[in-house]
Length: 82
Image (cartoon, rainbow, N blue to C red):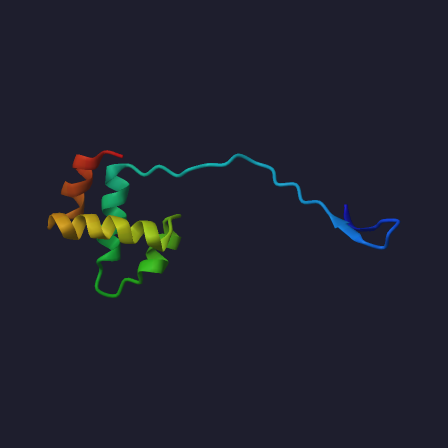
């Protein structure tokens, strides 16, 4: 009911949210590709994340993992496998 008048002149609104809640899972190869793309010379981190269906925060975490281990993205994510 949207904006249905009640006896006391108040309004009531009901929202129905449908669908499945999904959590995206990336393979190690996908993560490596996305992180490598984000390290590109003219790359915008937010844009890279959005284009690949992720968030800037998640991409930043992945980039830190690569930087902390001083590894190339593909080598790091082969070890993580999640």
